Image (tube, rainbow, N blue to C red; front, side):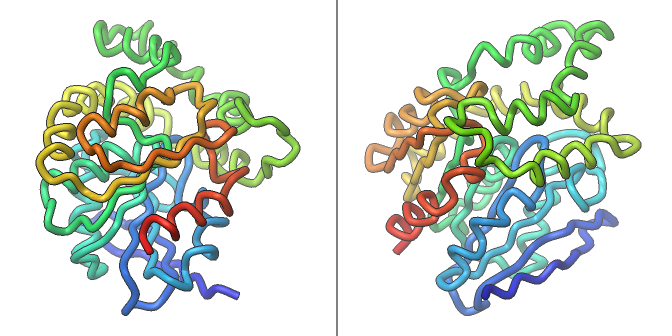
Length: 279
């Protein structure tokens, strides 16, 4: 059995909830989730890796059990997580990034390249060719921030859309536990959650604007890099994974026959790939 503890840290009056497992003397691994989930998405992965790594998985500000960000922006979230890593003693660590966790983690890497020992990206994008047509309604809001375009994004927050994100591209939907999407929908229904999430969808354009900065970091520092990608992801396409090799020729790219939430169906395979990669 793996001992997992559930803690909170306070970062500039923001309560950050996190899961922790593994020996504090082991190599450090930071897990960063995405939309619309929380550190709960790592519930199957953590026990598979905790015998080798000191793992910390926070709920990003505005998600899960954590407080809302100081400002509803990715810069604000990254600043909070940056300070959080210092508070919990993560001075050098590998980082696993997924979805929204990618622009968060990549900001940390750009700011502190000396702290990053490796990057594992699970459907965490940094290239325009990785963005599917599913982003069209959000991109319309970037170009014209009208109330109508903002209201159109509320469809992404609906309960059935969350279920669809979990099950789309999965060969057998009966293998996807309802626990994940039920919990996500609970968090999405909290007072104030809609405003936070719509603001972040609008601010996602700041991440795309930073793609050249992220790519320059990859080219300059060439971090050890593993992509573990659900190839049927409706939002982040396989060319986005393959593009990492353009800037990191030694990047390891692995595709799995599943969707956006690859850990729901392939946690064991992804854990094995991480173990082989990190050693």
